[in-house]
Image 1 (tube, one colour):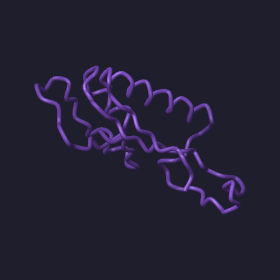
Image 2 (image 1 turned 30 degrees about the vertical axis):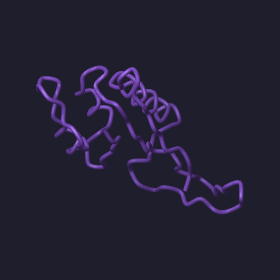
Image 3 (image 1 turned 180 degrees about the vertical axis):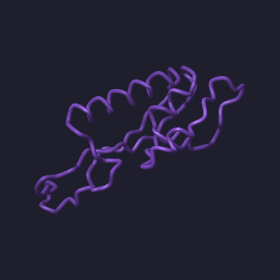
Length: 115
């Protein structure tokens, strides 16, 4: 499953609850809010999660990498949070769901750098 954020809230409502289905969707991206999509999956059902979560880079000033190069801030809605607490809650929520659906020997790959 690829963690995916969708800007449009209507798309989140289209996430189908697959817990009642007999087979999990294999080799598919589940579109929608990642927490809502993961909640539709049963416990310990995925081998790997690849996530590129928001970094909450709504900058009020400049940000530079250690080599001195400039980091362009993200201005898209999917990376906007009302507060650091809201961002922390989102991060805890998606990680908790990821842990729940990941098989005991599964892998979690998370992108975590500014570009």
